[in-house]
Image 1 (cartoon, helix red, strand yellow):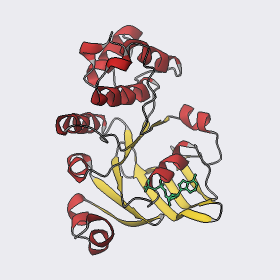
Image 2 (image 1 turned 180 degrees about the vertical axis):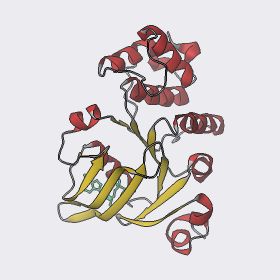
Image 3 (image 1 turned 90 degrees about the vertical axis):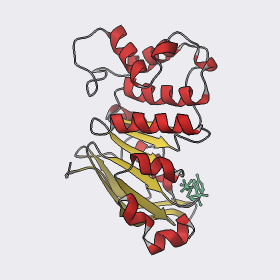
Length: 244
Ligand code: ADP
């Protein structure tokens, strides 16, 4: 768990001269679940955009699994195993849960290698994956009829069906009920170790349920990093984010 699996080195991201990210360094180990928190405008979403290749850094380098990825296109980074869940759902609403998974599954080979034993049929694998995120009972329901929580879990399942190893989640619990948030934490905790996960989140209750190490961003930089307890008693973090 110690070697750096994902590394952001001296990242600067300028938008027309405005530096949204200004010298960000971040290192995440394989199988780790890292929470990224910080006030609005701190640069958290921009950091995810940079990792998945939606945008390229103005300077600095991003390395993943031993390779530089910051010079690659978004589809190449996805193929390298990086999956991003956006705040706005991207499920195909007219298709069933099963069909959505099949479509995502077609995008990659070697499906579920991290999660399930090899050699079982594709159909079984998809069903197991749906079970894994709590959608086993609604496999044949049109995605447009899923609840908000179920839609978010399907989004996570789609990343797994695409064989993403590094999973980037941007505010996965936004709009969720307490029960849905708790279930999302359970899914994240079960993925931990088998996948590397970065979660941008505001809900500190959720962060406490899932996060081993928390990185706090402020004004495009890393302000602090540590366990929940360390972060909660950090004066600088309390001042700019936790509000006490
Ligand atoms: P966070 O996710 O922490 O709330 P963001 O990464 O969304 O912060 O934004 C960081 C800063 O960068 C904000 O000031 C935002 O307005 C700015 N920003 C983000 N994307 C763009 C863009 N495409 N063009 C101009 N400014 C941007």
